[in-house]
Length: 284
Ligand SMILES: Nc1ncnc2c1ncn2[C@@H]1O[C@H](COP(=O)(O)OP(=O)(O)OP(=O)(O)O)[C@@H](O)[C@H]1O
Ligand SMILES: [Mg+2]
Image (cartoon, helix red, strand yellow):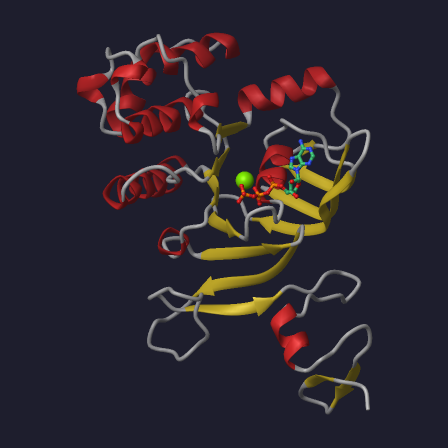
């Protein structure tokens, strides 16, 4: 579904240049539901905006389905946004039209995409548990209800890929569980691939794979596995995920800063290979 390699995004303004993505690699399989975690400013929204066709990458490879995001023309980008991806923004306000009803909010993007289907709009609202509130105007709904309208909207064009940036950022844990259940259902029943950006480790644990981003690069990957096995955990989590460091095609890997600091490794290290293990040590 998604293939990014050496993805670079540089934001330029008159004074500063910010390298938000520094050659990021990421692959997401068709039908996968996965999460991306990382500190504030690590490049999560930047990545999602690029995948959603809302922002252009500066260099590298970014392919979603049959679309090459670096080579797309503007009309192709519009087409892509209308039919391939669904997007839930970090800031809820961007998803919604406050003076329209929930139903009208879901119908509007359908009209833009040329596939108006009231029955499907109603079904989506029912799926997210808003059957009784579909004729309420958005400002009359609670934050969690609005967020569920945003989910219904993101699915209105029947996307193959759903991108959700902090979809549970401003709701309580019960609503957050409910939202995750909706995602799981969409993933299983409609086969939609889903990428969720989150700070919430509890939530990240509800997916099978978590990729951590650090300084604009994918650094570590956590894959859920049998809970009876003794493996490394995502900090603060209850579930067991096995941690892997990501190695790119050129053989580069990112060593966590804490490890380097603990060994006072600065610019150089020695690498030893004993036939079974590769050991990184401080140069003598
Ligand atoms: N439009 C922009 N112009 C300049 N710099 C930007 C722009 N958008 C993001 N950045 C910078 O790029 C970096 C990555 O930002 P991004 O929004 O992707 O972070 P994030 O991981 O989503 O953080 P958060 O968890 O706080 O949402 C940050 O240093 C940010 O300041
Ligand atoms: Mg963000």
